Length: 368
Image (cartoon, rainbow, N blue to C red):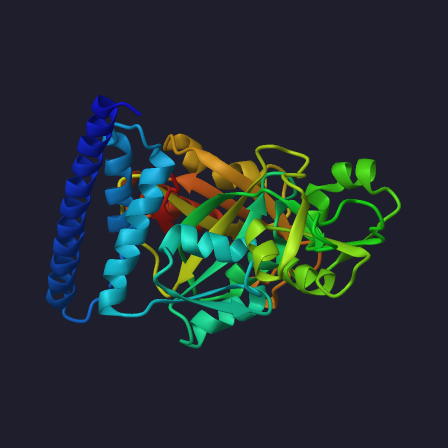
């Protein structure tokens, strides 16, 4: 390196140091103001999903680069998480154990300065919030490859909890197994592949091509599969890179999901939903009596108001209080807008007059 190049590099590093000092000062100033806001709230809830969504959207829209919008969002969410933690510890229940995609969804939405509570199943996630052991729960509701998570839909109908947020998490499935020697391990000798039922389904074509004779064993979570694979030399498991690190497994093949755009949508559940953020969704569940054209008539108020639906899912009614009996169906709808918007409020009132059963599951900021 020439003397001129060395001086230029030194000058650039000095500028970076100066910027880092400014960043530290500004982040500390922000944290101090956040504390003042917390005191001014006088006991009101610290986490405001609509406010955080507005901040993130504004910064993504004004981001000059070269960092991506996703990177900017990740950075600001961690700063907001740290500022929230100065006021209180936020407890978030998720489908455990540690290392699941659900845990990743928690950290993507709330940052790392929270207390993440690993629960045994989706039912326990709901119960943790309902009993006050956690403030929020993050649960999977649908996958772009395999569709709806039925247990979540069943529980959200009966639960008093409200949807106050959503998380879109790209899902990259890794095949991993117990480390064997210095070079790790390959596909040879794999007799069993563990994985959550959704993960196994998301990778079925790859598994059929590369491990056609391996038994596929469904487990309660991919982390449970990782725990088992860590003790069995002839087994492998599906899951995240985080799970591989937690259980000291080697990644044999990365990104083996059949669809490159494989994404899971998670719901954030709390005791109340969100105030309007300016770009929201509302989730509903409803039913009609079995009559010709009843479903079309039920949904017509949304069309008349020009309100777009992004989701329509039917599911057998499993709850006695719905009063539909055998062969009754519930219809889950996700539409644009907030329940307090005048047009949507009017449409909901008209739907209620036509429906045998209607429940607004929550209004919440649309995920980036």
